[in-house]
Length: 143
Image (cartoon, rainbow, N blue to C red):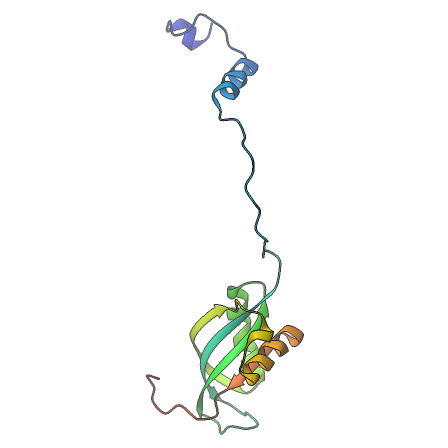
């Protein structure tokens, strides 16, 4: 005797098959599946970081001079792009890195009209990273 039978709720000893059959009877029938989108999981894409950094043993800029940089990174996700950029930038002569903005590049590289930006994005596809340094130093700390 089950607790349900002892309480007078049911006079039947239900098996697991009986319960499953009842659930299947009231469950909605599967309908036509919707369209599938292309999955980007596991695919690398270009991420763009807007950065302020100080030159440190850089070949073109004096030590301590602050510049705006656009860094293009070929990575699986934004988190990976953000975590790998400080090491790469240090190797390129930049320190005190401050990320001011970031996003995934949503357009085809060939459609970027500005040649230096297009070249940096193409370099990121081929080599993992591409940098555009704005030549005018930043004097205002709030820029």
